[in-house]
Image (cartoon, rainbow, N blue to C red; front, side):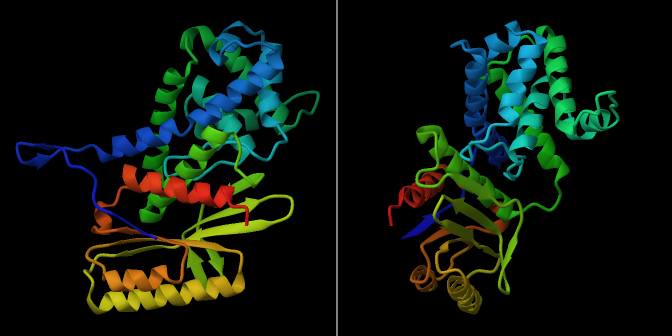
Length: 328
């Protein structure tokens, strides 16, 4: 099946497009942090033994109980957990995600400002780095919670939106593969938010950078693990600013060669490709489709690509759902 999508809707005022594409995408990305927020809330409820909201628990707990709750989140041993990520969709390791989440809701710039302070801390008890983080975060929340006043989702969502925008500004050189990675995170996070798991897999790891498979570089990749099996989802992202013609054939030929090599090296690999190019040959797309699980084709100049639009994101969500629920 080939997915084809066009550019996003424009917002024209007096013949000028004033559409705020970045706001739309960053807002969608910040909404994807809701499953992580909900997961934190569940852990706080379990530790506190209450049905109260995260906001109520934070506002009424003593510093020792806050520390226990934070530690419980850090040290949770279940492999199936939701993601937290930066402004271009790169997921954080779980403990780093916890540190960033709690730091974001109580203090800005945890990596640049809070992290150096924790590094300089000394203690007669020779505490570990994690123990210092638990102490720091619980003390900050206990001290400043009445200043912040709210830890409800809508308040935290605005904070996360600001942090994501800041991290995106600080990351140079991200392109189409970053937007595709964000779409991949969206699909897996969407599945988790509905089912509270990753289907037949106990663990999902989304790579934060390109990987090499044989002699080929793959832009976006996901590792799916369960007790008996590892499956890789690999997604080359191919862009061309030229329109069709002979370039289309050469482009397709190179891509098919890479697909065949990857399948030979890793037979269990699930392959999809995202192609962003204007007026690509339909026959060439069909040839690629015959060698791969799914093709997502964007008929546009790559410079105009700002990530999956709503229609193609839904289709990618369904593609991921098929993978996670596959009984084969």
